[in-house]
Length: 334
Image 1 (cartoon, rainbow, N blue to C red):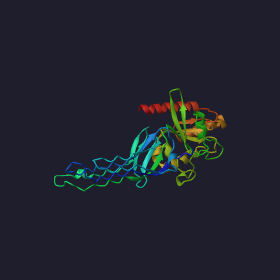
Image 2 (image 1 turned 45 degrees about the vertical axis):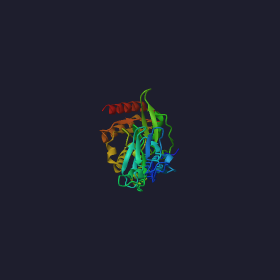
Image 3 (image 1 turned 120 degrees about the vertical axis):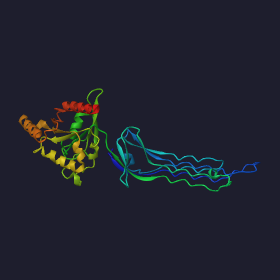
Image 4 (image 1 turned 60 degrees about the vertical axis):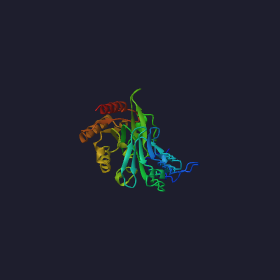
């Protein structure tokens, strides 16, 4: 199933029902009177977070949603029925924007979180409500108000504890396959990962965390090169970013500076997130090459946590997983 993380939909709340115009007519009752009831309120449009959804693909083709209008008021002081609401299910982690003003209307970060995105119109008033001592037979009513209409932009940011960042073919997909049950595509050419993948890393029977693998960035991503920044938003809610580097490259640490420059263009606040440097594919290096690379990395990035692993042979991955869980637990305690 194709991953869809941004859609535009049109929502229309229901109009309010009109007030009723009616007069009482009853046998053997010499004097009647106004008895037109009020209309019903128009239906609202709600968005509700559903943890069983992980993509916005349901809104890829059907993009117009309308709530029911309120029923008009009737005689015998009958009030019109309110219009039925429309509730749209979206994945947990969805942010809702007004597409025309770009105003953020809210975000749904927990299961069953609900947001009203379009309010139904207020009901009209029937003529019975206008009766007074000086106006015994009012013919005055009010129409129902129009419901709100909005064009919304829904943006999904996956909820993951850990995010993987790096160039294409840095070994991110291989890493997520080695530590979780997720099975993203792995191949020896760039951009094998076209859409974000989520994996649950089970450290023990009762301890786990979620890791997100996004498509790799390349130089010029800020200008739209490769897949650009299309999926980088999914790292916004992560607690730890693993910056993965291909240690077997000719100048592996050049990739670090390249990604950091692109990240700075996208959002400087992302640079403030905890970011660990992961030197992957060390299985092809000699002990001397490993030592030299680690020394250089510590010199250039003395304040970062640095790990040397091989996602393919799983060398160093278990200790990395333990340290990630420990760090996440310490963040929760703060």
